[in-house]
Length: 491
Image (cartoon, rainbow, N blue to C red; front, top):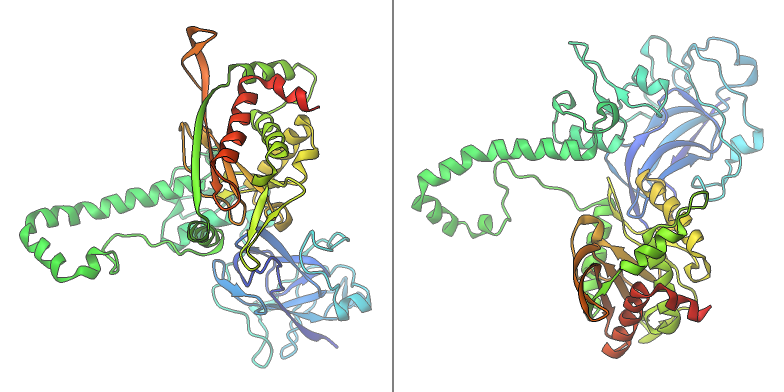
């Protein structure tokens, strides 16, 4: 006899209390194995797949894609024991009242009794799950049957699976319209953004490979639509003139942005965006920050990188070289590898350098962390940073790879800008910023020459050190950029 088990959103760690449903990985009526991922969620830290500790038939799903789900809220219900071995080759039917779904597909091998009844106890993929999940097989209810009243009811808004989705997630999903046109979309976030803004993806031109529609394409389409909607409003405002100004004076709330205006777009500060906003605000509220900067001649650093990247050897990135310089500077000035414990009013100097670095992705800015960076070679740093960057852009970073950094390196030069005053990544004590490297006139060995110049900036918590320490750190970094051989002195 089948037993219906309810699986709720587990505690995702790091103090997270909610998550946003990005994509359902199972349908109602589908057979799932123990520890099989059933939903992909986005937290304030990362995108993770949540595995279900029960094996059986999914009888209900709770929450639409894009919905926020608090920890402890039901995600799915599973009829445990609904697919015994002796029905593996039969065409089952829906057992009304019990929620046991049947159909034409072949059921997988039933999990062991103890694992099926009690669950695996595992919570997240990559956090204790060791065995690979069994292959999913879908059981389609006969005649469109669903669980009757009295059993768990599926939520509204579930979308049918398209043939492209059943073919695999490694290719862009293509939804055909009445004119046999196709839409190439691979990201569930892109689909959700279009759906929430009532945007027809068939009207969007994809700039990705093979016409793939990217997040930037959707944002551009929404921006163009807003501009079209605002043109009549702008013309009307010009005609009204003084009357419009009088109306604004009578409605100060509208002028302050408190009341919505036609054509405006409101983006909820939730998920990673909300977490970043809160962290930036907390940093500015709590940390008395100061910034110092210096220009440096990076010509020799670029020459050193070219010498390292000989054919047949692992490539060394410029960011890895800067990371190695940073760890050497922190060894000389450990005051900056610290945090402030506001509860005990103590400065806590940290023994290891867990180096964060800013990485731009389609989902926004993330800061992956290289563990024990002070013990890594330049080649090792380069390989690890490349791995973390690729994983970040795929949305697959774990919580451990995004947290507990002690110092951050921010290479905003990739955006073509020279300088910046970055906000410290709370609760760290400092951030080193690197601008673009550009050819500029520079006095070299007493003569004017064209050299490759970079601006370095250091934003630091004035509670952990004074300007002398901050200036000494930044000057050491600049000296190593100008003369990379200085690093040999500490070996």
